[in-house]
Image 1 (tube, helix red, strand yellow):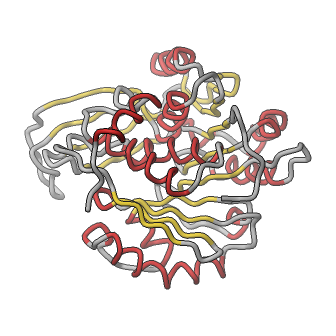
Image 2 (cartoon, rainbow, N blue to C red; image 1 turned 120 degrees about the horizontal axis):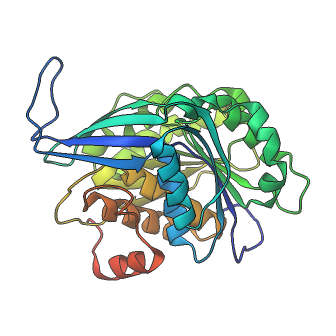
Image 3 (cartoon, helix red, strand yellow; image 1 turned 90 degrees about the horizontal axis):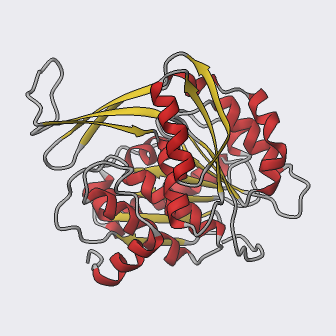
Length: 336
């Protein structure tokens, strides 16, 4: 962890995204050109940034989260504002930028595998000018989180402001580059922590490996040599950390100083729905980072949150509280 003072009540700023998620349950994922009969259908308020903000709020003990969102002028936008208020999340930076809110479709197989398509809509209409309205909030934050369902110019400017803050503490910046797109040096220079899944890790590190099919130790070894090249093209930031999630295998942490921690996943009796597992992981990661917890503890808590969401249908209803995570980790074994 960075050598920073401890934080009793961390403050979070989430560069979010709002997607009305429509999910179809199918026996298996359809092939190209194929129609399948669905066995179930669900509509849920969602979006990677929304999920993470709510996940952080539930793992925290009081109102500590603000979110930046671009939404529509429609009923789902009204619903998401009320949801955020109910979860104790600030809505000062929720902007109505289009008629229709973002929308996504997901197919969920009986084995928990998923395939997702997203229309970002007003999420991408946020601009660098919106970042200029956040100076005070950025300066008060201990951690700023972003993902690529929102506007790239917004992320770049907010992260730049975070690293240039003149307040007593400089926020950690955490980026989940999903859906994947190329990371420019201009953005990377402001990033402290990158969080990627196996597919994104291959793209980031220039690999073509079925990482989730390897053992945790083998996956860590195969990535290690490529990670050294990443540090060389990642412009010098205050801190540089990479976390790779590997689904049922676990996760691996790398630091630019050469540290590597491989953390096995928890054993889940039945995987019901993998949608949102990465967001649950990200929520716990952000909370642990902001509290300056040790990496072993951060990764274990994050794995637990991902496993808990995988064992239930839906995302928002499955995102756990801190007490639920404590009970889960006390009664559930990690994978060998």
